[in-house]
Length: 570
Image (cartoon, rainbow, N blue to C red; front, top):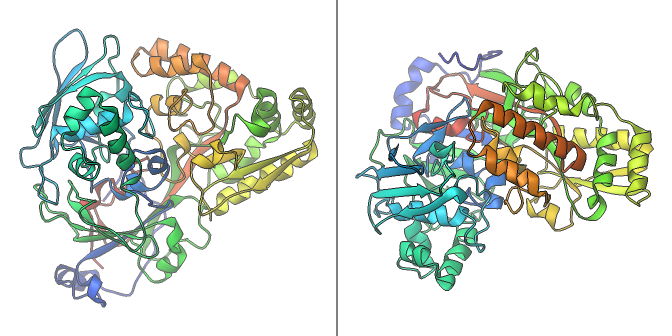
């Protein structure tokens, strides 16, 4: 029995006897179609899976992290508390004594990709090169931590690597680096990009070779429904990618070359948001359903599931463009003045859970700190109760100061999403008296680049612009989403001091310093208003009766963080 999460209601489901079905699952006889003649579990997520590479800007905003967390493991993974935990199956990481932070990595001697190629330090080199910011050709989501690395010492093909950080840049959260989904198969990138020596190309900074590697890293692992060339998508985890269905579902099967404990279930089908999840629920295809509370209309697991709704580590927010309508801070403050943040929290921020303290306890008044952090009350105090209720006069004054009259604000998000559609409608109603017309621009084809391209004026999203599961227990991730040049800075916000604060938070572990830095940042952010924080995003997670070892994880990892342990007795 899982006690960490505290399951809610429980009802009966599927007229089958658990005791009589264990043998059927073991033999596959319980299933009716040829593709289902192995034990299979359906896992629903509220995002799309468009790429194998969760480290690009598009990949980080997608459901790749949740789909491939046990397909492309790393030296750590994000547990249910939102912190990085070491993954001994992949190897070890230990600090080396010295004046600068140095970490020695030793990959498991048995670690091998599903295509038979060993996992080597070359993979760490490619991960660092792609996210370090040194090579502008890579469109990485975040440089946090990787930009602080001076070099990765690696003999091509070796299982050992020494990662040396820059002097004075002892990245506090280094155990999270090279974690689950961060290590992509460098041998595939090198083969397709015609770069036989990835380590050598990175070490020399060869611009042509780096350019070819980046082109593949950015786009070569994109997923197309109905297509999945196994040569491009080898796995280093207990599961491997078997196929991508016409509806975008991702079929994972046991990796025959996995060196660790065999997965508890041979087949997992990840059903994404765009695959008509309500119909799959009706067809009993879904065994773990991990979505935003109230996000998908008609998706309400009832009889036969244990369901809980609780605040997640993701911060629901409006990310504003810093061009077009919102080119001036006056215009952004005008919009914030009419957004009904208290109403949005009351109606969409705490469905069915205790809101007395901690996460989800009220309107979110900090962009960097979460409500269960000790520094939150002071950091959130900067808001001083402002921007809770619509203030039409203040909105008009600020818009006049921006030099604009009536304006239209297009708010985008990954559709369909009933909760976000309702939030946009509530904002439209509140802002109309201030001559600010709000249009719902939600789309099933939403991509992070829509904001910077001018196609949208704002995005309704979670931490770092993600549309589904998001967030960790950290100040660093949200801080870097507002840093100059970082991939998750979707609105293109530019403030040198905020970027400096993000860099300082990455290495300063003093509680006093972190409090001062976060408070200083919030003073700037409430003035410049690049984002409007709303509330801790509530997650609704349903687990079918008969499921064993399924543990909710309302962070960026999603509930599939330990899917290789799942067993379902139907």
